[in-house]
Length: 356
Image (cartoon, rainbow, N blue to C red; front, side, top):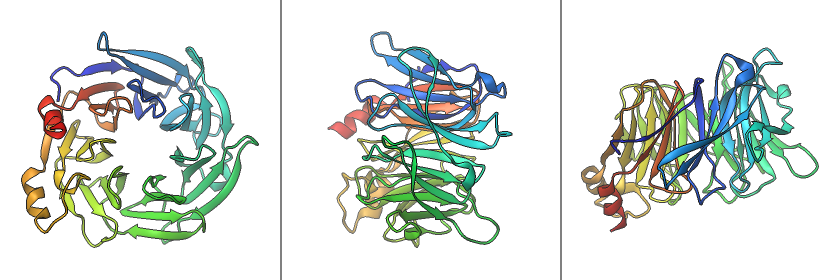
């Protein structure tokens, strides 16, 4: 990647990062801190100033507790959700919807979700990609779909993960490829897609896709049925969900757990990964991209063209998050546990190769 990444440091530990999805005109990212000094936790809104090539922050107080994950609304620049270890509930994880103030200050609480009846460990609360009223939370072994319309918060439907040994979800997100209400989860080494119209119906699943716990997954934004998974076995795997017997591609480019995997939102042959080996990689997977020509020579074409096109090794701690900018698709942000945010650009020669 760029030899000189743009660096922003948070004074507290941090492990949650997301782009400000609704702002497509600027490169903006949100960071949630995870300090043991619980009353001082913050959300940082960091914006890239192109004229000076520097990052300018706005800092909001999040006095409810340590932030474990956060998400931004795809349509409203000021709405975000956080999942946090509540200082009022013996560090049980709770979740809330917030509004960013115009200037630095306290986050405005819009809704504190009544999640406690479903469990004590809220992993994520995410916004529906197109319907402003819908959100979904992953709590222990429960999925809860919320309606956060004008009349407050209502429960639309729930689903329960059944199985031996008290299975729990590790993460979840909406399926952007599905026009229906389909929410996808990871539990242990498995992926499940839930049809929320029928509450408990599993639309499809990928079972035993990793040998150790799945930490993250992502959907190809431009090619139907294709998704990526990563986990503690150090592998990133790429799947056609219509054939769950084996991955289309399996890579072991990191030397430790992979915490985060993201398709580039525009140029889906580029995939970013972040690992506790301290490295961030951009990998080119041309053969399974939306631009690829599907033919019998796909495997040969893939093996020739797939490679790591950029490595960022300037982090000094485990890298928990990697996210592409909503403003400039060539910018990749990464966040390590020591609170260091790095912004890198896809190398110029790779940009030209894709564009030409």
